[in-house]
Length: 207
Image (cartoon, rainbow, N blue to C red; front, side, top):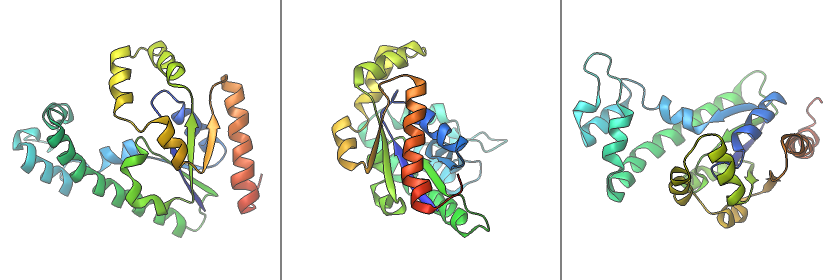
């Protein structure tokens, strides 16, 4: 089984690429979903966050974490945001390693496990888990237009993009790059080409 970290800036089409690879037979793991899993009611991380940021974050009946209230507190200052990351990221990384190792040890592992990574610079500690880093590239102006076309405000896009790795940084850390400056059909063709060259030919998986 080949494990690939899939990265790209906001609006780059990273999720589209992930879904297309899933259609080709890949097992997809979304780190955003893992970040929700580690904050399940009663989890050690949920309890620790409540101790740090306030017990009132937890619903008295269900134990569910009020993520919106947490965000308002944790992102009030850079120091608190860094503290939340220091708590969350190790738990997310541990769960990712567990999921990938379980796939590898399964009776019928997929040819490809694609890990959708929102912020590649935050997971450098487990970079060795990936056989390859695949980055979806698209110019910032085009990504911004796409995001606004889907209903995001320009201000929100700018704020999110400013907190992500730059295109230059992503290029430096990419093993492979998929260009998403064209239309959907062009993107699908490029994904298929990458899959054939980097997965089918490399692993001998059935076409």
